Length: 230
Image (tube, rainbow, N blue to C red):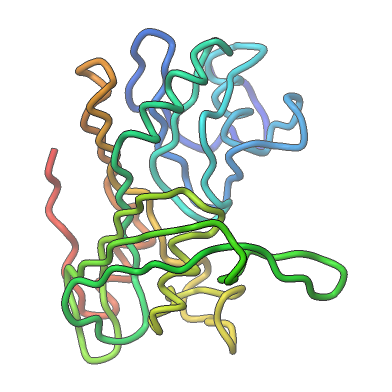
């Protein structure tokens, strides 16, 4: 039986396990990592409770409100190798955005930091680190679009910042849109697919279906959900 606790109502996020690597479908609203390894309110804590393990390692991170694919490792020495698979692989997101996106677009906009109110935030910055994304519309209406975003780099908030820079911020975007969007309870972003050609075959082609809240949003906006490719 799963351990009782604040995440006990959540389904087991592990979708694939192979040779110490866990492929998880992270629910929205749950951080990937917590303040420390004793924090139950994160994906790592949820997996540790369900698997009755003292430690697991997050190979990469998603924003708290972004749903979808995250890779975890059961053994720390696996982290560099799995991180290499990610760097050489392809990461694809689905996003619901404001406006009608026409045609494929490539975005080259460096990402750095801005400071406001004593805090710092990711931002498009001329002196930031190089970042490139490829945006392809999947469904459009008069006022909204479902887009596929493939990223060549993995900068903090990259998809969110690049879509806002393109003039098509995420529905539900509160940080990188002025005024903030309250159309949806979270920013409408989902880590959809990972293609890892250097990984063992069970881990080479991975997909996490859109969660119910984003399927409901698409239906409300009159946008067709993408068909599964797996």
